[in-house]
Amino acid sequence: MNLRVACVGAGYFSQLHYGSWARMDRATLVGSCNRDIKKAQATGLPAYDDLGQMLTETTPDLLDIILPPVAHAETIKTALAAGIKTMICQKPFCNDLAEAESITALAEAAGARIIVHENFRFQPWFRTIKAAIDDGAIGTVQQVSFRLRPGDGQGQRAYLDRQPYFQQMEKFLIHETGVHYVDTFRYLLGDPTAVYADLRKINPVIAGEDAGYVLFDHSNGARAMLDGNRHLDHAADNLRCTMGEGLIEGTEGTLTLTGDGAVHLRKHSKTTVTTVLGPNTREGFGGDCVHHLQSHVICGILDGTKLENEARDYLTVIRIEEAIYASANKAQKLKV
Image (cartoon, rainbow, N blue to C red):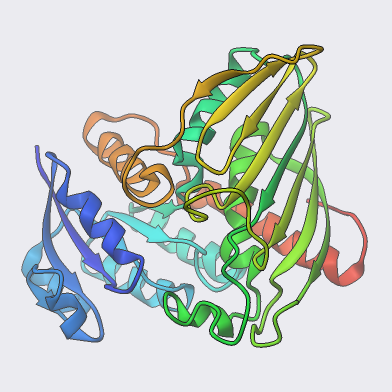
């Protein structure tokens, strides 16, 4: 079976979605919709500026929603009205928790499913790290830390050439970027039980926070830390490959993620290092994680494999995000 896929949204990041679908043997792109129809036409697909019309005329099996959060709710409602039963929706999912809960319930009542396009957990280095943890390569995990250092947040023109709406987001570091690591830490360690956040704004042209620390308590006794600063960089030819560097430390060893996408293992009390995953050679963003996620969805639909990050499960990520902002406002640790 070959799935018919339509896309709504044709902005900067959408090129990764379109390119990934075009590489799949079991998916066929049937249409592109964007309020600026010239951008939809630039995809080379049948182009629309009316979503309802596109859905009626192209009859897709799957709708890929590649839009900012402000547009998610109405887009999903339109898709449900057209009878669409499977959607992928970009993150951050909806404007806030209340809207996300409402839309999730609406989709479930219609017998539809939404998979949130949270792709960082599909990056090959995090899949490798998860497999190593599950295999006991580093014993019992005690600490996970990630230093987010994309180095793209300095000066008056920060983000304007790529994603200009970043400058207007009142919640930025966590809501737009840090949420990737909220989900990734969940993937590696399970749900956190408490969070503590210290957030700040460095670049005055940015509406929201662009640096800060977030500490996570996990039920198995492990701790995780996100140390984010979009002004600073890390040692990598491509700063957007991993967006930073990480350590996963256990009782029997340490896994190190470097900026080239490689994962290295050092056993406890040893100085020698083994490369578990070599430097990234894949084209595409983040180790081709967009393609990995979209392929995962196709397998879930056609082969019946378990889908990760369906909307109901992803509500937990949004609840954690809200706890992070509340913690920063109150300057105290909060239970999730």
